Image (cartoon, rainbow, N blue to C red):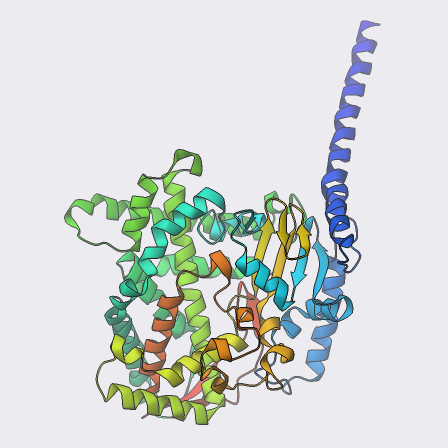
Length: 520
């Protein structure tokens, strides 16, 4: 009797545990997301109806497949300056047309409010509350790349990181980095010159890889006191990790998948360990020689910042490694991809290429470029701004309501993520005019404020408190690189070029950019 009673109690206990687990899973996967959706629906915000567990992922895949079939039928006839979001994220354009500029959709358990209305974009940019921060899925789904670094953190940790890192990108500091940027640009130009001397003029060069090496060299020298050769393994691992993580154009939103030993997850874990070990070695070497070194670069500031960090914010080692990863990735990836698109556009528009080259030769007068010269390159600045409008390297500005937040007339409940598709705003004909899909740097001739009706919707470097800290650094680097190349080469787009922007965490040309190069 006693044994039977024990078995019965055990059965009831196990059944209760299983029942609670099932109920809790149902609550997390359906009831809680449904409550969030209802709070927005009651405010007049609607969107495609989600399914259990998957949200709108299946519909997203269907629309993507339909778009691929359409593209295959019209391959070669799509303008190189068309809105890339319509081909990479066609479901967003479809839902915007159906539900309006503000709509709600779901990727599993992640509830997303998509924002394409200028007024609400402005409200997000003006919001100073820490309750509107970076989405939690960044640390979860992209933790191997971003960790708890400045690109993904919130609250007190983010404030401390910003205090440590921001001063290193003030313009007076960037001014001191000009010479090393020029040296890196000369190395790249010399390598192309050498190639053309052996292969002859009108040789085809696929520029993507070389531009990525250039920007990696600059961020290594400027921020970490080493050359690209020293950080080569780190950049190689980061690139592999980026490719592994960019298989999906959205967070999968399905709880638990990131913890399963799937092939993709195993690759991420392995690369993350390798990157962490490589960065830790650089840091240990720096700290061992700190007494005999007078280097006061960004790495020095990060190490110092980790030493005065509140213990509640995490370990010093994680602080250093995660922020180094963030800066290695963001510091070179966005510049290289923007330079690649810029060369593609100048190759496609020879009149603008000639105009920028004329300005560069007139300003520099055959001398090595310096900071004062950079400030005089107005036409080149316009071309870069227009490139960033047509091909913003980061496709989204994402925020999460960490607590309930009021944005204009909308009350965002805690847990809702907002997405702004930057390219969609940058191609809005109501804002930019009838030529919004055309390459026209002249629109920036009187500055960003006069380029469109709603200047706050020009977001190549993000918006609000979380605007990219490195935008001064990036613009100076781009001007030095492009002026160096334009003063030594002419180039045209190769007939082999296939226009296919691809989402790989940043937006880059899927098949590269081959240019026909000729020395001046």
